[in-house]
Each structure stands twice: as structure tokens, then as C-alpha cells.
Length: 315
Ligand code: TXA
Ligand code: MG
Image (cartoon, rainbow, N blue to C red; front, side):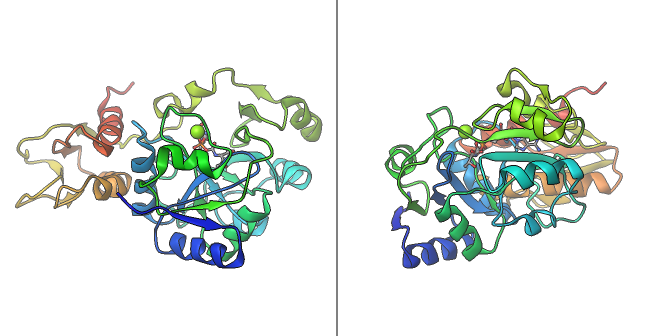
């Protein structure tokens, strides 16, 4: 348990919240849609703690929040279509999914290994002030325990996250009260989640049809995402011993391995390292990655979900 700081949206409260974010801590903050549970998107451990605090059973990719358009463009490949909707609707309750720039300094856990990134420039003045002061990209899912209702007031955040996060920045009630509209622009324009900004509005702005995904839960499940990352090496789970040609991914105290998710058996550390280590071991060219068992509790459930997807039969 952590003592969750209650911060006012005063200059002092904002400065404190920014410092917490810069230090890898978690801050719930208001946006015009819902309260977000923010953490530094370039910090593996901060992102792992977001999943842990929410108690999410799997690693859904997260939306990264920025204070301005220029900063967004350092992380994604921008396009004319993106420019058109951003000109009209940013800052505001719209998220864009765009191709991730190679070498963008972000935790791989933020995108759950995808090569696209969801980006948003919120309009809420408290959110904007916080993002400017923090100066880091801020990953933020809705600030509620998994499976609970999205919070539109600081008190709602505390109902499910008190003691699990470092601070909540109280900026009053959210205007929209519904998560942002998500527009996919990595391929043909697709509405990935409905919201205040409507499909008709987007179609008008783009001057072309916007495809609709009906079930937003479907696309949000990592296994359903077409481009979802799986290593090219085969993955062998619950390895009790190593075989000769394998890249060896350990968990907990062991004598020999190639990489260790967490030598001390810390699940937050293991989650923070998971995607990065799978990438690194895959890059060695080993035909198979063997992974030691990870306890199926807390964040271990999400880690095992991702590992079993990586190990699932390919076609
Ligand atoms: O209004 C909002 O968008 C709030 C505030 C805090 O900004 N945030 C929010 O985040 O709703 P979250 O994590 O609850 O929802 C993120 C959604 C998920 O459905 C996720 O699958 C989708 O965005 N998403 C994120 N990255 C994606 C990607 N690269 N491709 C497709 N979908 C993505
Ligand atoms: Mg949510």
C-alpha cells in the first residue's frame, strides 16, 4: 500500500504531480473525457505499475498523452489525414492510432509490443498544465480498477485506487464523461472506439468513409490485433531446465540464463522487462525462447496471458 496524495490543481499541486510523474510514480489526473491513471510512458517500471494498480489481467496497449502536436510528431509517423483531424479536433476528446516511429523512446509495454501508437492531446486545462510541467509522454488508461466504471471525479478514482497509486490531482468533474473516440489511421481510416467525436464528423473532415469496428472490446484484446507482436522464435513455457539451442529467459533466482525477468521474483520488474527481453532474445536468432514459470498471481496473470499468446501455435 502507498499513501495516495490528494493534490489540488493549484500551481503547487501541479508541480508536485509533475515531480511524481518524472520520478516514475503514478498520478491520476483529470482530462475532459475521464480521469486518467498517468505514468511516464518511457519508464518500463512506471508502465508496469499502471497495469498492476489497475489489476488488468492482460496488457492492453495504452494511450499516450502529450501537451502539444509537435511532441506527438516525434513519436509517430504523421500524415495529411492526421493533420486534418488534429487541426479540427485537437486538443480534444479524440485519440489517433498511428505508426510508431522506430527508435521512439517509449516502454514496449505501452504498446504491448505493437508497431502502432495511440496518441492524444487532451483539452482539459489541468491535464495540459500537468503534461507541460512533467515534460514526459504520459501513458494513461482510465483511472479505475479493471472492470469498474470509468471515473469522472477524483473521488471516483479514490474509490478503487486509493492506496494503489501515488497521487490524485483533483480537477473537478470531467465534461465529457466518456472515453475518447479512437480513430485508427495506421491503415484505412477506422473508428476503433466511439465517443463524443462522431464517425460522421470524422468522415466529413476526411472527405472519405471511415470504417466502423462494432465491438471495441474485440479490437482491444491484444490477441485480436492483427499486427500484434509475436517473436519469430518459438516460445516454450514453464521451462524447468534449458535445452541446448534455446535462448533462456529466467524468472527468480537461477544460476544460468540469458536474461532474467526479475532475479528477485518481483512481478512489477518482470512485467517492465517482458517485451524488451522477448525482443532482445528474438534478436539473437535463437530458434526457440524458453521461459521459466511465472507465478499466476497479481501482475503474473497478465504476464502469463502475454506469454501464452507468444507461445500459441502460429499459422
Ligand atoms: O478518454 C480516454 O481515452 C481515456 C483518458 C484517460 O485519456 N483513456 C482511456 O484509455 O480510455 P484506456 O486504456 O482505458 O483505453 C485505451 C484503448 C484500449 O481500448 C486500447 O485497446 C486502445 O485504446 N488502443 C491503444 N493503443 C492502441 C493501438 N496501438 N491500436 C489499437 N488500439 C489501441
Ligand atoms: Mg478503461
